[in-house]
Image (tube, rainbow, N blue to C red; front, side, top):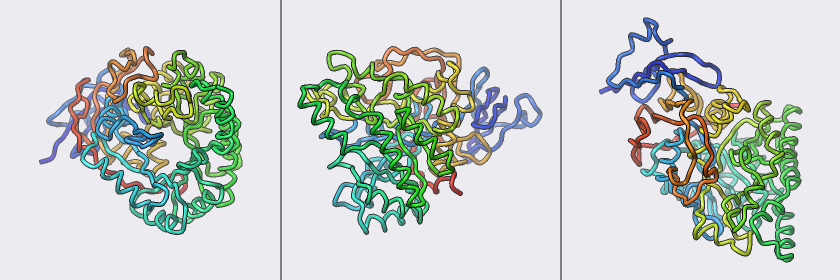
Length: 467
């Protein structure tokens, strides 16, 4: 039995086009588009019709940087794959790529299997995995080849967090050389963790223990230095590079310089760096702990450079780095010592709406919104055009988006499993109304109609900007 849905009368917005069109969905895929009101559109028949008059019809968001159930700082990210993917769907995101973790002394396969076990049967939307490489050795390097073959085509390394995820320059170079051969993409957390640890120790010795000092010790120059070093190591290895959660104007400048030289270097930023600042870290009564993440929030003047980077394509992707920890009982682990505050912010539910607000505010165009939130992340990580667009043959991951509805972001109404919102009280224009994942309604006119286990694992091809 085939199932068919028609979405009528909406403005279909993709990274390349805007067209008033009806969309025919059949058996979980987009079967056809036809201009609304034309004879071709009138031939579309289906069991289910969705009226999108006055609304946008957009691809489901693709969030390629999430951390569900991540162990960190003696605790775990508070969203499970079940709660986190449900919240993602509420926010118009229909695919996530999460990070499986290799522990030091263990194989990549053990880490990947553990993450498959966490996710399988629990996700409301489709998901894939990157692999965090914490222990570079000959066996790890061989395993990287095998993972690329089976659809885990990106590997994250850390220049930060000595003693936890940290890789030195030699380990990074070896992994980059391997990815140059096997087609994988190295994702880099670019901060000079060795130098930062010195500044942390000195700050604590001076009695500077409040959350705001987290931002002060993780200096923008140390993000820029690490970004520069990552670029040069990738250049030596002949490998592509994707720098995650870029927060500082000096780091953007390093990426822009590398791209101007024609290097295959890419950069991602996150909503927190576009909308929040060190003012939040400095909130009194330990409230600033809610905003502790790494790379840290920067002074407000960095925001304009990030927006410009998104407009000029020096930055290509906006992901969330969704890694929530509750204020009560988790963030509070760092009272009296900012270095013990678990690093991470909730955001998987807010990204599409915040970026639509950026369209309203004139920072980016509608098509650029879809490009940085849907199409480019899908291409960057080998999922396009299955994901990231509304076109015949694509998965029917489709969002009906009301561009005129107003909402106030609040922990009282969000669906993430965390006791605060990083954007509490912020009024935004635009709201998700209905979400389809592979043709199945997950959100139906602001009601959750999905289920755990609908989401399936999605193997990925290699980065589509390198072919």
